[in-house]
Length: 252
Image 1: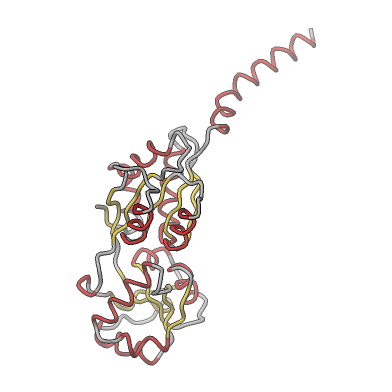
Image 2 (image 1 turned 45 degrees about the vertical axis):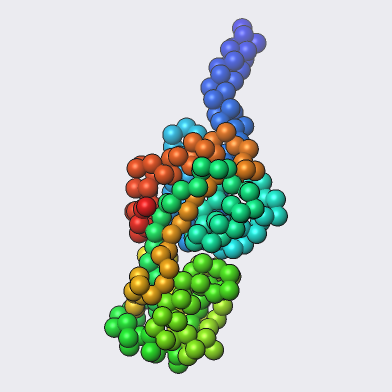
């Protein structure tokens, strides 16, 4: 009798575990996403997993670093860049699936200071940047830094600000410097500022001052996950885009 009970229990346990084991064994898509997407893309991955699908694995870094990884043969499924040029670069290399590149998100560029810092009129705040240290993503490679340089050049402040710059490897690294009090000001995306309780937006750059901030999305030719294309479509759907709007992004 005991052996019979053990056998029945074993069969029941196996049948219940079956769907979970199948889900665990499914190859989840690997998403290479710009650093500014940490919270929003994580929430999108959670929403996808809640549908009973394998939870996407997200890797966040500067778009420049991710594009170089892709060019070097990284085995990833999707790429979300924080600007068009880095997506252009890997597309020219023939590394994305034709027809899968799509406009996805938009953002704003802001100046942040410590929480509680007073908000300034743009002309006053930008003038003061020439006398204080400013954290910025590397303007020679990282999209947020490129946008920042364009905005400062537009306002005639680049020459004054350049000697005071503290260059960071990504926009989130620049944000962290302000959060830790290492520098009094930083130039980041509006969504980065929204994600942090340690900083305050003190000025907003005019959208005329820099190229449009656009995040394109594409499936990579190296993709192997069967969920790569379904998850791409989910991100572009009304349901998917609603997640990113909650985190302050514009949807395109």
